[in-house]
Length: 267
Length: 267
Image (tube, rainbow over all chains, first blue to last red; front, side, top):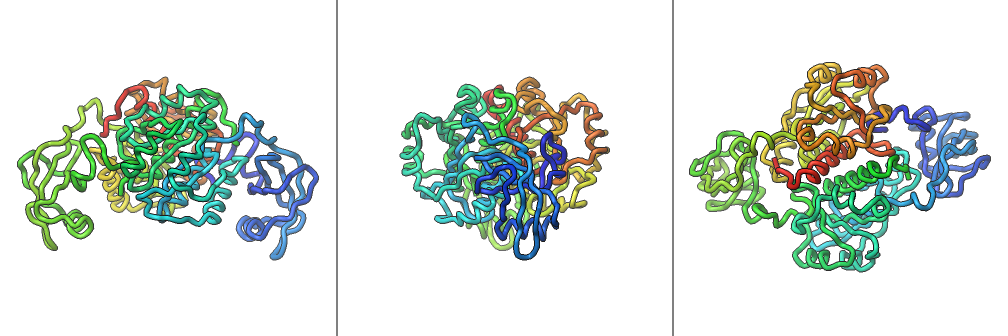
């Protein structure tokens, strides 16, 4: 399940058991009944039994150690023990918003999974002229984002919104937040440089806009260029696939935030 | 096929036709017979006919415009017209070497495809104690790297070597080149900062080491820490899957190189 050297993090690690996102309120001493999918995961996949340990978390309450009180083919109840991590302070919240042209096939789940790992605060699918796909399965993609958040140590799950047409997404964007458009026709500043100059506060509220597999149409490109808050940025001279561009952009912004701000915040 | 805004690059673009990597020598005025896979791609997928245009490239000779002289179900011959791009100067060559624990399933082709897009100069699979897979299909992965190079505008295809055991890979590494190990147990410098401090020359010759899905064993971690040239780097506080860590590391190093060195080199 876990990635590069995932074994022995300070304050975490496998010894504390599986990590589950639970939207309802969490507090030390409370009992929590888990839904069927999580019961199945703990009982049949992770083979937890009574007395086993897990971790439950959400962005409002933080992360708690939990002990299994009852588990079987029909139900799973756990009790919350001590709080392992507090919720993030308001100023630490968020992460860049990724606006991305809807992709088809396996590239969309890959994008959602890795964007979650790389710290995206929100995921906004965008419908463009050249989108090969016009719809997406929000429930399935939300489950993928939740699972990626559970594995990655995040406290939050990125907000996945229903698709918007490009014009609507641009019109809704708060122009006070930078919106970095990754399209090499824009001839933009290298993203690492733009991020460095923007400062760490802006990095958590920034938007990253990536077109669909076929790129923006000429009319869409003009609309992006004219939208308030937009600056074109460059991700190097290679032509990146849409989902590669999205992940590279998130990685670069996250790395700049870490380099200027010291520790990442695991939100 | 192409990614974010792939349509209208200066000096490139779809109007010039499909882009094919051809290992044999290329020069203006020459005729070239293409192998079956490329014949099939041009004839049946791209539906090129006599007089159609394509681009042929390799890292030794650069990139050439080509015109189709004969194409059908049995053969494809093209003539090379003018050179569109020269080969890279020796000091521009290369790109980081990615050393990665062998992954199983679809994650390995994803890693090879995106590492190629993101500018890896060489790909070195590494066998570790916790590798779930012990072998890989080098021919198939090389074909994926070639296709990704064709789509991304690179002139070179990354060298994909047969797997090495971790100890052998560490022993073979030239200690004069930085080898950045992505394992949060190492408590390293943020990668963006390490890359900035290393300077642009080091970025093209650096190695990036990422463990397998289960992470390095304790003994392997010690061996990595003791190896000459190794420095641990951080990719933020989230736990990344192995292939996500590899791609994020390449994206960050590439972005730093672009930010300090001006234009990327499209090698």
